[in-house]
Image (tube, rainbow, N blue to C red):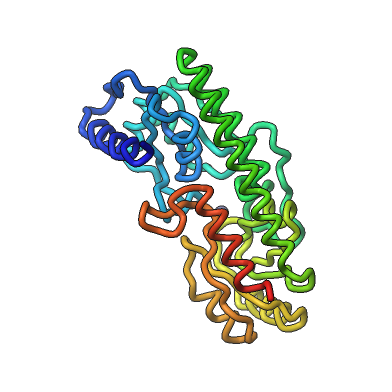
Amino acid sequence: MWRRGVAVAGLILIAVALLPAGVPARAGTRLNVVASFSILGDFVREVGGDRVAVTTLVGPDSDSHVYRPTPDDVRRVAAAQLVIINGLGLEGWLPRLVAAAGAHAPIVTATSGIAPRRPAPGEDRSHDVDPHAWQAVPNARTYVTNIRDALVTADPGGAAVYQANAQAYLVRLDSLDREVRAGVARIPPPRRRVISTHDAFGYFADTYGIAFIAPQGVSTDSEPSAGDLAAIVRQVKAEAIPAVFLENMSDPRLMRRIAAETGARIGGTLYSDSLTGENGAAPTYIDMVRHNIKTLTDALAP
Ligand SMILES: [Zn+2]
């Protein structure tokens, strides 16, 4: 059913792209929802099921931090009946897009109610607040309940469906949270320290107790200086950090260089800010978290 939903959503997306600008899309009787990036799109599909047609602006394997909206995005937002965003500064490009679209749809922030994480000293490069709240599964619960409530408000006739879908998905998230905790428990505490490309795992680290050290700051829009790199290399050596990890949407060369200069192993690829396409390792949020904890335990557990 999920795959059919995606196929139908794909057709609607083509239909929307073919519409002249300014003509509202009518997705049959389905609620037309725009999500700012792929992880939110997955949550909306889980909760909305067949009652919603979801399009995402920042697609699979793409970077929300430095995204440039397209003319098609303007049309999608103009046609939306509901827009779901992450907030916490992730979508800096959104206000201009909404203005360009002349959008009237409600814009709902999926992180409402989540305590924002302030980046630790030395971690912060471009944001006051860390936007990557989805990386802690308990926060994903909040995303899902916010999305459920937004769908119920936008489409009260579907309330029972949205509540039932959300409840079923929350049960799966609880099980996922237990899986992550069991995975971390297998890693000896001195080995719960890794390097990754950008500071996407702060909420994960705070929740599950694995320290992430990232040379690139919170956002992907800045490159580390030679001095930053030298400091990271010294730190990896001094603290005997066992592994460095790549990310699906970041340039792998920096991590490969750190690994080569320190002798730390490359533990694999973590998925941080976007899902993959259907044939990738992380086509859904649950797949993504599962892939990440397996990659971490494979590299760090005895
Ligand atoms: Zn990020």
